[in-house]
Image (cartoon, rainbow, N blue to C red):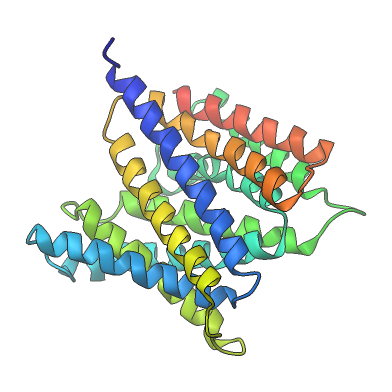
Length: 283
């Protein structure tokens, strides 16, 4: 029985989120013995080179003029911010908590689209956005149990949301390969910034190299699957499957790092996911 376009898109989106969740595991594991800046710089450069080679093979400009448009420069700034602070968050805090907070990114994009681009957002979607933000507050637990390090994930999600909003205003015609090369270049820049403020690089062991290779591979697979997913089926049917990333992240964090999310994290994560699905499927 042949799958429908929506079913294929949903499977691709799920595969993409699994790839990104595994990438996070490799980054967190590699950063246990290497400076985080070195990890991000290495993965960023490797991914940039592969996407650049793919663009060159198609005869596409390696550094198109559109890269220097105001919208793309803003996008790059947000991308570096998101990559930098999310990398710090998954290294310094629990992967399960960071992943749960990141799920609020689409909610920020919905709110930003209304405030920045004047898009119409129904009262039901605004309520969903507010409920999602409440879920983030539950995860953060402001008060006695509050950890300032949790704010790293919040800044990271704001960076990614800003990147997605800036992408809407970006010049048309840039291929996925060109955008991929630029995205990984910004990851490398974030790594260079971190490395420049630290003690410098460390000679990686064979194990470290394997972890870096794994992070690069799964990051690129996740990006490719995401690209195809967003071009297969209806966006409203495919996009909610972004939230499967939280399932993979929670399972991997508990299995590999011994994390045990508390009740507040589960409740907050559930509220964020439910709110996001409503916000993305209601007009």
